[in-house]
Amino acid sequence: MKKPLAACLLCLLPTLAVAEPLRLQGYVEGEYVRVGPTGAGTLAQVAVRDGDKVAAGAPLFALDTVIERAARDQARADLERAEAQLADLGKGKRPDELKSIAEQKAQAEAALRLSEVTLKRQDVLARADYASRARLDEAKAALARDRAQVRRLEAEYRTALLGARPDEIAAQDALVAEKRLELAKAEKRLADLAPAAPADSLVEKVYYRPGEFVAAGQPVVSLLPPGNVKLVFFLPEPRLGAVKVGDSVAYSCDRCPTGEARVSFIATQAEYTPPVIYSVESRDKLVFRVEARGGTAPLALNPGQPVDVSVPAK
Image 1 (cartoon, rainbow, N blue to C red):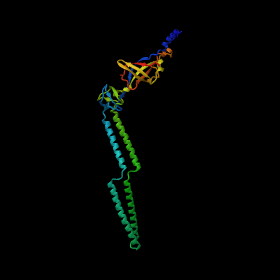
Image 2: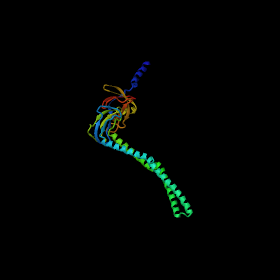
Image 3: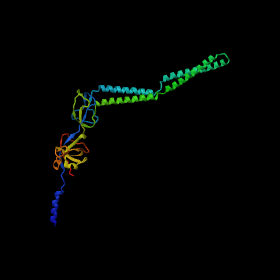
Image 4: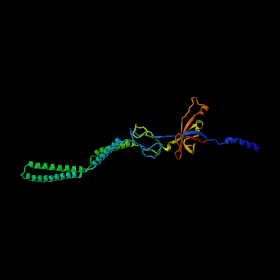
């Protein structure tokens, strides 16, 4: 009885064998960052060469910026002038102007005191019939005039201590904000003509040389950040459900150690569709593009390099 049982177990061993991982051919692809100016102009200098490694923020190239620098300087001068005017509106009169108003007020007060004395004298004379009513009326009018003059100069002195009206200050404040925006735009236009590397990158290609004219938006330098290197391979339709974004795949290439990458993209449409109605036979011909990137570190591979990809069996 034991021998038949052992024989049955041996017959089941092939069905219990672990499925082999799927081995596919793939290649390395790079997502290049092409840097160009937002405005047109003559290329003044190029700070990099093909194959250079640049750090983030390193200068790449610069167009001629004489006109843009002049516009920037003009915008800065306009802003400084507007800010000075705003500061001046918040202040009162200058000390010499205040002194002049104070002296005029002192003269008016002295004239007022004289008018008061004159009115009293004319009132006494008029009561004794030594002066006419006309002289008394003149003295009263002079007193009223001098009092009004003193009140006017007192108000003028108080006003001189204050700044401009709130509406005038608000209008000047808005002008300062406008000039700040104009300066920011001028500085941005100037910076766009001399861009820097957006990230640590490899200079893949320099398209222009100093002295050449560059159109707006035309790339001057092509960069390849390490994180933009990815594996591309094509997964057969029957194995599509066995792979999902985030899964690990192993790769190898000629004269390089085996590495690991993580699936970052799976196409939703097949790369090849037979011109017939789907069937079991035609379905086997469908392949889907899959992309994988480095996990904890960027892939140390070159674009165009062929690789062997191993997809674990599930």
